[in-house]
Image (cartoon, rainbow, N blue to C red):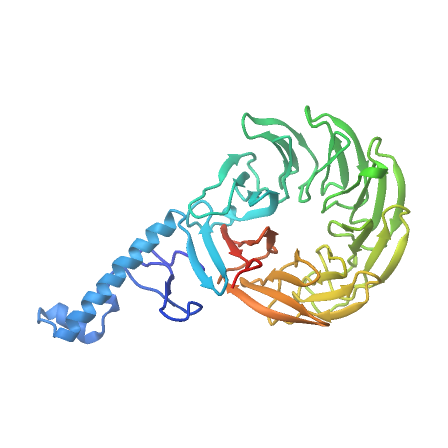
Length: 438
């Protein structure tokens, strides 16, 4: 449900459940001045002092009661109250973060699971919000960390939060005592840090990768590139090696202890996001240097590629004609790719990258990053939450919910709950049917 304040004397859209089929509901808007809901004859009755007829009395009473109910509902939502929309075997829960405020500064950054139903996220106010559980009336713990927005995922280690902001400062924050230290890079940080061999490693848009002491913030070493680092590094623990891509088109493998480059592969085009690691294979998408972000018709010259993590040899690479700023999403059998402009989701074989099909949707989708070989989930840019169930070689689509809000981040699956953060600081979670139900 989209909860947006419509005006000084108006009540926001209100969700009412109708008897019978619980999947149907009525949305309407009301004004706090009861007289504005009446027809011209009824308004004339009030103005002239004539007594209304019995049907008119009933209309007035019902309208007044509905107005009072809507005002009460508004104040509940102002306090972050939760609404529920029931669907067969599943439930949609919505609540607002930091009250009903659609300021862009309330927008949540990347959601990071903490185990169980817990997760953490930054926001546009430079705060970290920790959700200990997804239950009605549970409020997040809020910690003020930076003066600038935090959009990057959060690394949590030994109850310390490591995260960078859009001003390029990287923080170690203890929720019990506050900031431990911070380190200033030359540009914004949008990727997650990685804990590797007793160090914290993070990339920056200033074209450098930094290895920092987790206790003091002391710089151990840095690796300079010729392009910005948007995503997060991958840690190959058995090799004491780190793999990361940058916008100079190079996929690098370094010794995590020294920062020395072990090997590199030139893919010629931008590596705009974090490569995916699955079963010791690295999957990545590249993007054309010269491609115009505004031109939807131009063809991308980048590739979809797979690299053996041990030998660091290219297993295969195929043209990626669509435009991508996201990472591939890997399951045992498939790779799911979400295009930038068209918002379509294509399915490829993980074995050789060959195109298999395109998921059925009439919406522009956010990046798919939840599911497995049998069922995947994604939310559209207009807030429609979908599931695709695999049936032989076909994927059957089901709309789970219409959140009626704008979204640009993909949904996150934690246990049996799909979590969606919208562009206005709102948070939604959808409880999936579990085995044995219904």
